[in-house]
Length: 329
Image (cartoon, rainbow, N blue to C red):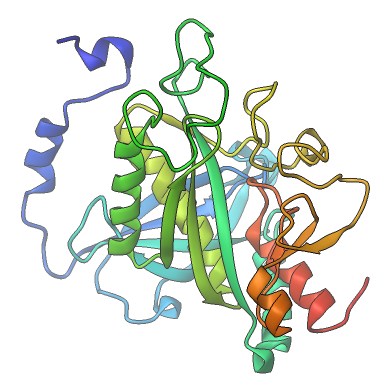
């Protein structure tokens, strides 16, 4: 059997780690891992502090700070950026009473950083609270080897058989990375992330998890935490997660992205980025109306335009401001 540490130089022996994770932890000590979105608007960062109590509410946790010049969010001459705790989840990695803490980021003057989209989203959700806006979000992603090639694809830079047999598939010749997917699912459930399903996608090594239904600001909080947990789980397997809209060019379905024009071509079950459209049970439209909703004239709609690497705070805010608050600016 080959040694996985040879193909993954950063791999470590998890049996050694377990010896230390199993050490008893003082009852009055909680490890709180603060998590935030960096200056890219896509990548997550984290660091951990010890607190001397088990918080019941998120506002019991202290604000913290970090070096924003190392995350493209501040100049070195004024580098401190504040972390404001906004949501707490159980820690599926350190277990016990330890927690993961989703945070907002604020500049030195306590105004939101450019990539803090949550502050504005929360404003919209508070205004629309009486309407109880609900969201379900599908998060597509691809699993990649450390060399940047999709996990399980032939080396070097070879291609599997054309897409067709991979969607929701089973079997070693068509389902790549299920260990990561199942581990992520269980970790999210343990953490309290409102994950409601998973499935294999059209391109091999491409998967999806769903979060919801969540009300208001919770949709963004739970999706971002689901992303963080996915990165951490994949890290333990020596696999990289990408939310790139079109990680592999050619006749493969994309997953949405900031460069969404590469995906919204009007082909591969997408609408054109240049035109708006809506239709019942039509996956080629901008807005798909489920067949049951079209018949009953009530229910939910599916906006198929947002990218897999979108900021869910921005997307849910825009939906609420345009459909509930009737704001068009």
